[in-house]
Length: 384
Image (cartoon, rainbow, N blue to C red; front, side, top):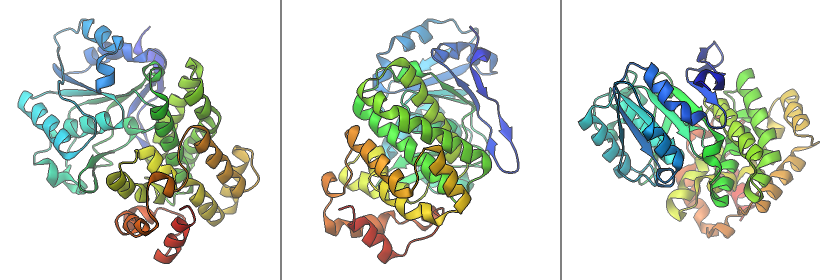
C-alpha cells in the first residue's frame, strides 16, 4: 500500500478557508513515512517522539526501513511538556545539526515543540523573541511532518504552537507554521491510557464547539466542527471505557476535524480561562478547558444566529442549549473528568486569579459576545 491511498485532504486555500497541510488518514498510514521522506528534497532528518512512542514497535519498523540517500536521526531528549527549556534545547539541537526536515510523533507537547524547531531552523533569533510575536516568523521553516499519537490536540493541522512558562505563550504564523504534512494513524492511539484519551478527547470537543460559536467561523470550519462534535459525543465514552479499533479510528478522525475547524477560527473563552488553571493548579489541558464548557454552552448558544443555533442543536439531536449542556456534563462525568472548580482544588477566591490571568481580550473577543468582568465572575462562581 502506498501513501496516496491514505490521502484525505490536499492543500487548499480560498477566500474563506485555508488548509495548506497535506493530510493523510488511515490505520497503519504512519508506516508510509519513509515513502514520503524519500519524495522530499531533504537529506538530514530528525524524528522527535514522546517517551511512550519510543517503546513502540512502529518506531523500530520505521527506523529499519531503508531511506535512499537520507540520514535519519532520533532526538534523545525528553519532552514531557512544551516548556521554555525543553523547546529551547530542541531548537538548539536542530540548529547545531542543521536538519533540513523534522518529524514530530507524539502528543501535543511533542508536536508543538517539533513544529517550533522546524520553523526556527529558517528564522533566526532566540526562542523568547518569537513568543507572542508572530511578525518574527518571516519565512517558512524546513518541512515538518506531524504524526499525532493522541486524539485531541489538532496540532497537526494548526498554525501555532504552545510554549509554557510563567504563563502560556505561543509561536504562531498563519502563513508559515502550518505543518507541511499530517499523517493521522489511529493505530498509534490504541495504547493511549484512558485518562489521556479522556483529556485529549474532551479538548477536541471543546475546540470544535468553540470554533462553531466563534465570530471567525466560515461554512467550511462549521462543517468540520459539526462533524467533530457528532463523532466525539458518540465515540468518546467508548474510547475511554472499551476502546475498540473502530472507536479509536473515529476519535482520530474527530480530532482531525476539530483541528481543521479551529485552525481557521482560533478558540475562545474556554481555552483562554483554562491557561491559569493549568499553570497554577497543574490541571491537564483538556480538563482545564472543559470545566467551563457546559456553562458556556448555555451562555453563548442563545447569542448566536438563530439558524446556526438550530443547525447545531438539530445535528446532535437535542432541542435546547440546556439539553446540550447536560449531555456534555454527563459525558465528562462518565469519562472521569471533574465538572466544578472545587473538585479541581480551586478555591472560591481563586476565581479572581483565573479572571485576571485568563480573560485575554484577544481570545475572548472571538466569542459571540464579550461578557463583562462581573458577568464572568458570576458565571465561574456558579460552577464552584
